Image (cartoon, rainbow, N blue to C red; front, side, top):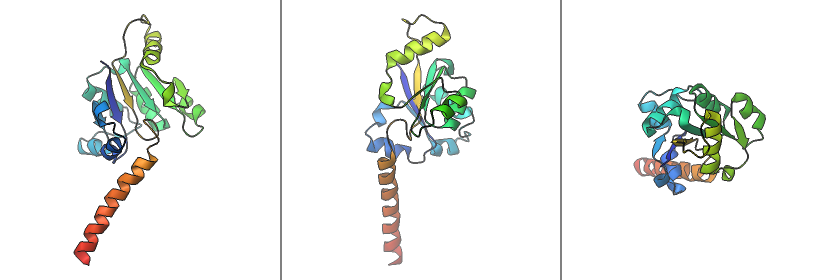
Amino acid sequence: GIKVGVGTSSTNAVTVLTKLNAQSAVDVLLDANIANRDNIPGKPNPEFYLEAARRLGVEPGKTVVVEDAVSGVESAVNGKFGLIIGLARENDTEALQNAGAEFVLNDIGDLTVHKINVRLAEKLGEDIGQKVLQGVIFDMDGVISNTTPAHFQAWKETFDGFLQGRTQSTG
């Protein structure tokens, strides 16, 4: 099947994916915590998405990256990924295209595996009936969903715990 990864600069990725009940849908997570621990440079360095592809066990040229930020699009372009899809969340279609997104959507709901495979096959000069797509790597914030409520809840839980512990220790 098609491997699914999340490549995000967020430090709250596990909490957000849990809140979205999406952890089981993700084969590989590369977040800021893991990148820092393993000395993986962040976006726009191509090594960020290249490492996510290695961990997924997929070829970058047969993998799609879905991004809503210019730096992430640049990372995928410089990593020579098969197809880079921009997701315009802030009227930034032109900026995403200028950074190298091959097409830009306003809603991730417009994506289907079939559409992605056909676009990738066309780009690679392959038969559009062939399965060429090996993996999809999604940025998390602004791509998988509007993560603002989940981020808020994650930060609230973190700080509530911190403040409660501080109150208990200091009185």
